[in-house]
Image 1 (tube, one colour):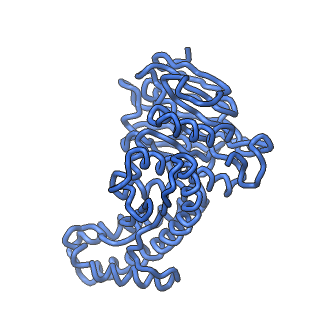
Image 2 (cartoon, rainbow, N blue to C red):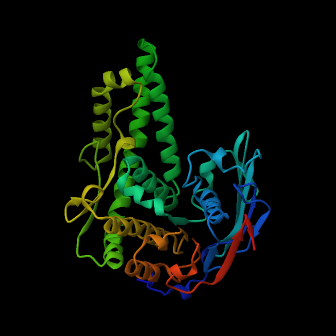
Image 3 (cartoon, rainbow, N blue to C red):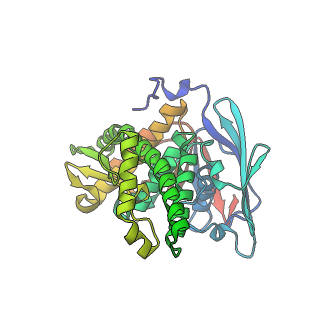
Amino acid sequence: MLASATGMPPEFYPSHVRIDRLTLHHFRNLHGLNVHPGPGINLIVGSNGQGKSNLLESLHFLCLAHSQRTRKDKEMVAWGQESFVIRGEGMIGGRAQNQSVEYGDGGCRVKLGVTESRKLGDLLGHFLLVAFNPEDLDILRSGPQERRRFLDVLLCQHDATGLEILRRYRQALRQRNAALRLNFGADEEALLMAYDHALAEAGVEIVLRRFNLVEKLAPKAMEFYREIGQGSESLELQMTRSLGPDFEPSALKENFLQKLREKRSQDREYGLTSVGPHRDDLLSFLDGKTVRDYASQGQKRSVALALKLAAARLLEEASGLPPILLLDDVFAELDQGRRERFGALIADRGQAFIATPRREDLPFAVNQVFTLERGQIA
């Protein structure tokens, strides 16, 4: 399993996706921080509250355009400040990549090389990254929103056009929901029908791309699950199909339009669109039983890790380069056996950032160690 998708061991990669310099200003408790990571495994150690998770959060935000810890960007601004800056410089294969994000009163401003943007999502798809956090169990035990988010972030990194399709769908969804709240006359009814068609066009694309992604993800997740948990159970992944069982785009679109017509009265009452890929779910089963309802805590941890490892392998196959890995105090959550097996699967896979209060939790060697004290490298 430590060979690449091309069959070559990691040391034969000509280059990796990596960040060579990370600069932070007023990001939580990190200010004036310049970190020069190595291309291999970078260990961040320190007692609780010193900024380890904040450092990993900044990388997550820079590469994936959202925090894994909060939905409110303002919460990441240091106390008493009005803005934060994250800047990363590195390499993608043999190409230099510089990108930054600044948050302030006017929202976020993104810079990719010399190109500026107000679209936070433009950060996606450059520094490919997969994050492992103790909260990853929420993928399995919380509502469908977290599982859709996992798939959509992966889709945006795996497919360069994925972000634009999601943007189109979300815009059409917002417009349709706004139209549903109007006092309808003939003009508004025609407007709503136009939004139905825009929603259906983008929605069909999302359904098909998610299904294709899950088809590729499932066998990899199954293999990783058996390696981590050493269980004999069969892991199965399925997407719910709210638009029906068809796979032909025109049939899917007609099914979606029909369901929107059927639900129109209900949707008007609540002012929300009740059917579509924004309501779908990624389901997981062990020997036919839902992981969410029947799996043990150890099994859930193994499934969550397997999903993330499968996502990393999928990105590696698509790009030819292993993505950056972020691991925030993950090993402490695992028993000794899972810790060693999981560690073997991520060691020597390119650049990784691992935050832990105890070096002894890691069952492998690291390339570089950073000690954080009060938001500064000691």
